[in-house]
Image (cartoon, rainbow, N blue to C red):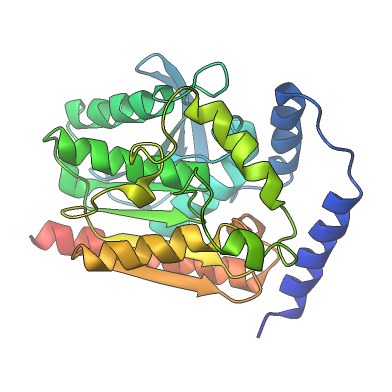
Length: 303
């Protein structure tokens, strides 16, 4: 059963979104997400440092504890058209603390100015940089939410196909894996989702897809061959139109022989983990992700 706090905040967001003026430009969308994200406060114990990595502005999020030789590479969401350190420092700070890992979050190039494959090229470049800096692949974890979850999976596919070493594990929150928008949950969850409307999915996807094919696995990982990828954790809310992007991914991953764990949270919405300070389900989700990441790193270390 959904907690009272969970129900309150879900309906609060539904009311706020329903009565908010629609954004009329990409610039407004970016500003709105930054403003919203700034309300999510990171843990006081996590330190931050700006950096430039492979020509990209990036941020290090450093919890007080954790191994010196392990890293989390986190790819933020935002529909490939928005998202920044301002919008994500709270969410990613909580995840970094739970995982007990120094975390690097690059601000990859955004569409529509930079459609596919710009974001993928950037994530691969940052991953290679971490390897070149001496981080062993079995001490690396990838993570991301929404579009960043899809980008995380596309990065894994590209690494495997290029013969590059894969990380120890990956986790994704409400990943956007099907930019062709074929999931039944676009219809069945439409009246439940407090954030998104189905008719907005394809126009947003078009900014990133550009002249490409939305079913290209490096754009929509749902259509890829998932064999040989590292252990994967998926957390998703039951009240979101992108639910099937997670459930179908998990089915394909199992069929391909992947070690995959799917956790569907009753009554929760898209990337509800941002509310970890106020919603008990969100806090538990972040804690479970952290425990899973730590266990996978320990298993990889043992070989």
